[in-house]
Length: 137
Length: 197
Image (cartoon, rainbow over all chains, first blue to last red; front, side, top):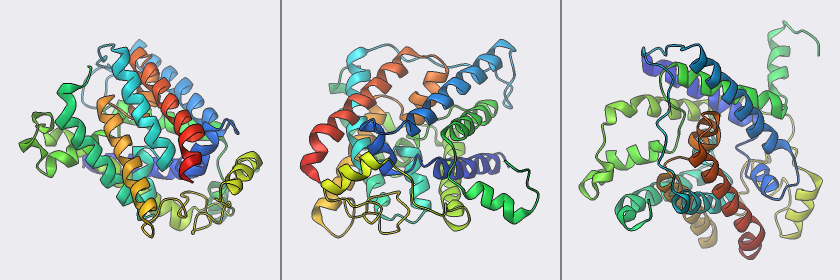
């Protein structure tokens, strides 16, 4: 039953990603070329409203459905790690035009090539697990 | 904007491309729902769990994790896939994605005529660039995916985890990671992609 709720939120997410056009390689390319405000508008609005929502949930000590309070486990600050990891991700994002969420959505749209992108992502994830002790953390 | 009650008209209303503000607010609603359900918004962890399912725990202890805690995330991404199917079948916009003239001009100069470079005509994926029919298209898809998967795990999160969830929680590490996303994206778009088109 719980998983049905998450499935439903996922369906909603898939529709939103499609209609926002955030799943479009061309929108991502346009964003990195600073030729439209569209993607900046989406991310900016999502973060402003998201921050307000989280603030309200924390302020009024709202309980989640699991009976917990809203919290976030902070990451240890490590500049080289965040920048190196972010840069690797960004290089890939600009090639594939999609980050992980949109990959699932695009697969649903029937773009089979995205299955190959996801296979690459699995390989990249696996490689990190193997070499992680050699990287700055 | 007229108030509509006819189901067909409502569908047509949803079918239009959404304004960025509507999309942004809708994404923050997803963040709210997942947070309210006691989980944190993050998609790339499904790749880690998938590695675990495939037996990667035998190679690295990094992949030894409690999969039961990840069922909800699998349900969420299966939903995302279904949402994509539903949107493609019933909610397609009448026209391809309306990217800017400037981007269209640039793309046609490098040989990606818009929207013809997407064989579906919808303007979602440049199938003339990423495809199964050329070695280059295959390598770009795998290589690009590799960088996304590697970077997301090394940084412990992708766009949903850092740019949406992390920034909404005002996390400095997330902000630096997002700056990294843009460093990589700008480097690729302006310096490397022109050599790859």
